[in-house]
Image 1 (cartoon, rainbow, N blue to C red):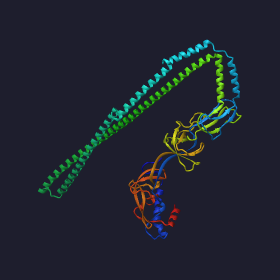
Image 2 (cartoon, rainbow, N blue to C red):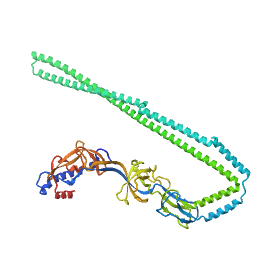
Image 3 (cartoon, one colour):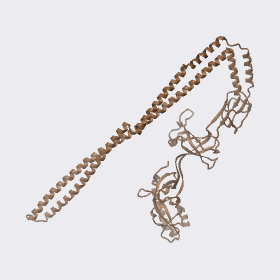
Image 4 (spheres, rainbow, N blue to C red):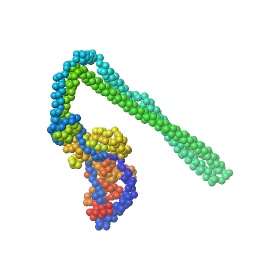
Length: 588
C-alpha cells in the first residue's frame, strides 16, 4: 500500500551493512580513482548518472487483476415450441430492436388444430342459464364490493401501508431528535463523561503543579543544605587549626556549634521537602490514573453515541424498507383484485357460450398463442451475438443471444487478501492488449458477499486464497472493447495529481531524524556541490515518491543514491569522466 508521510525504513534496515560497505567503497573510488585516471585533482567525483531531475507527474497506488469483457445486459431468447424452424431472419452482428422478427417456426400443424377446434366450437351448445346467472352474480357481487370500498384484501393492504408509514415517520423523527441532541451538545451521557474527564484533567494539572512547586522547594532546600554543610565543614577545619584554651578557640567552637545547628536544620528541611515530593508524586500518579479512566469513559461514551446514531439510522432504513414493501404489496393487491375482476368477467363471457364452448375457446386461444409464438421476435434492443436456430431443426430451447454492446462490464475476481481494499464505486483503470496503450475509466459495480463456492455449495478456498466474484462497469464511451476480450484492471487505491517526484531511494533520514534529499548545484565548468535539503514526503508507488520543500522544483537534480554521497555535502565535486563512469558502472 502507498504511504502518505515519512519514508519507508524497512528497505534501509535490510541493507544497512551493504550500504555502509558500499559507501566506503564509493567514497574511496570518488577520492582515488580520478588520480588513477589522470584527473590530477583532489576534489571528489560526482557521477551524473547517480542524479535524477525532479519531475512533475501523477502518482497512483493500485491493485492489479484480470477479467473478461462482457455485456451488462444480455438476453437469451428461448422457445418452448417443438416446431421445426422455417426461416432465420438475423445473423451474428445484426442490431435489432424490440419486436423485430428473428425467426419463423413452421406452424402448419397448429393451424390444422385450430381449424378442428373451431369446427367443434360451431357445434357446441350454448351455456346453461344457471351457469350464466351464477357467473353474472359472482361478477356483480365482487364489483359492488370494489365500488363500495369494502374489498377485504385492499383494506388490509392499505392498513399495512398506513401502519408502515406511521412507523417510518416515527423512526425518522427519533433519528432527527437524536442527531439534534448531538449537534447541540445536549447528550447527557456525553456531557457527564466530558465533565468527568475535564475534572480529572484539572485535578491532574493541579497535582502536577503542586509537585513542580514541591520539587522547586526541595531543590532550594538542597542548596541551603549544601551551603550549610560547607560552612560547617569549613568552621570545623578552622577550629582544628586553633589552640585549645585560647579565646579564639572558644569563639570558633561556639561558631561551629551554631553552624552545626544550621546544618541539622537544613537537613531536616531537605528531608521534609523530599518526603513532600514523594507524597505529591503518588498524588500525580493517582490523578493520572483517574484522568486515563475518565478519558476512556468519555471515549466509550462517544463510541456509544455513534453506535446509537447508527442504530437510529438502521431503524429508519428498516422502517423505510417496511413502508416500501407495504406500498408494493398494496400495488400487487390492486393488480390481483383487478385480475380477479377480469377473471369474473371472463367467466361470464365463457358461461354465455356454455361450459363446452368455454373449454373449446380456451383451447383455441392457447393454440392461437402458440401460432403467435411461432414468430420469434426480439424482446429488447441490442446486437445479436449468438445464433443457435437453424432451418429444419427443432425450435425448442435457446435460439438467440441479444446483448447491449454499449453497456459493458468486466467480470473478474478479487483475492481474499485484497478484499478489504476494494469497495463498490471504487475507480478502476482498464487496459486490454487489443486497445494498446488506451486507458478506460471504470468503477466497481458489484462485489459478491461470499467467496466462490464449488459445485456442492461449499466455499472452495478460505483466507487470502479465497476469490470474490466482482464486476467492474466500463464508464468510458467509444472504447472499441469487444465482448470476450481479456482486460487488465488496476483498482485505484490512492492518487496524487501533478506532484513533484523523485526516485524512492533518493529520500533518506539524516542523523537528526529529518526526511531529506541531496540536491546538486551546478557551479559551472564541470563543478558541482551537494546540499542536504529537508523535504516532506507524500505518497509513493514503490518507484517514485512525492516530495515538497524549500528548494524543490521541477528540474532540480537530486542524488538517487544518497548514502554514497552524504559525507560529501558542501564539498566541490568534479563531474566524472566517461572512463570513470564506465569503471564505476563495472564496479556496480
